[in-house]
Image 1 (tube, rainbow, N blue to C red):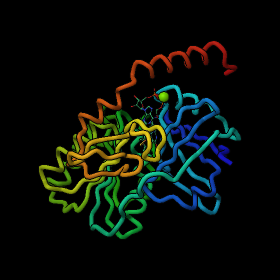
Image 2 (cartoon, protein in one colour):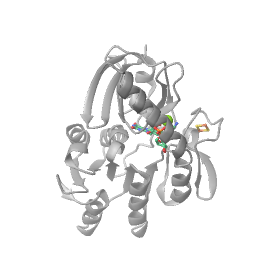
Image 3 (cartoon, rainbow, N blue to C red):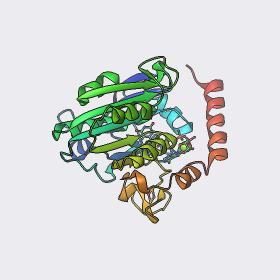
Image 4 (tube, rainbow, N blue to C red):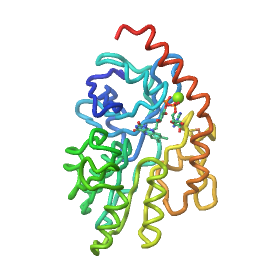
Length: 281
Ligand code: FAD
Ligand code: FES
Ligand code: MG
């Protein structure tokens, strides 16, 4: 159980694991996540279930190495096991036939968008997916997102692939062309989700965002993941992760995400130093 069946490198610091987890593979829905612990002393890390295969009893996790725990996971090989994989957690995405849905994924946010585009398309929606990255070599899952969507658009910040600019530039051009959009969904770094919401608010376009605050228990007990939505405190792990983007206090979210930066830096540097000195790689 929790064994890594396959490991792929999707870009410079993004890895994909297919993990043996039959119960979660059967129970999960689009938009849900798991909390993993790499080893006995590992911290609890939330990761979206990017895909699942109930017949094979596997789930797919795609993660970016940003700090100690994700870097440690990145050293895992096929056959290695996670200490725990708990889930599925969070409320599933609300899927119905809305009409035309624009799904926007930025950076690692493309991975959690994959099951949502897929489920929206299966429900009969016209799914226009826009994926973006800083540059071509950091763009992930292009072919899978193409298959999961009716139409796929790509942007890169540096213009090395697709449209030169941000996902919001493509969204703006779709609006300018007169595209009738019934729902927008955005997942990515907080500035990207904030920019999408700022744009869609101007056009009264309903917008769902998937929030990524720091989580600890993932069951609504610790309060670590609290955010303010429409002036009320919400726990992202049980009330979300998806919320009406026009009601989210993004300024508070960023502040809370950055609360432990000094400790995270110390932990990352100690890990990198240890790996540099002692690993056999
Ligand atoms: P650290 O150096 O410890 O932290 C780097 C930054 O990551 C921090 O500044 C903080 O903003 C954030 N972070 C740190 N600890 C946590 C934590 N316990 N919970 C949440 N955020 C944290 N990342 C992916 O790459 N792929 C995914 O599919 C994915 N899905 C997510 C789904 C949800 C519901 C949430 C809340 C987060 C998701 N994340 C995902 C983010 C991922 O959990 C963090 O990148 C990871 O926890 C960083 O851990 P670290 O020790 O490597 O980095
Ligand atoms: Fe503890 Fe949400 S992670 S309440
Ligand atoms: Mg950490």
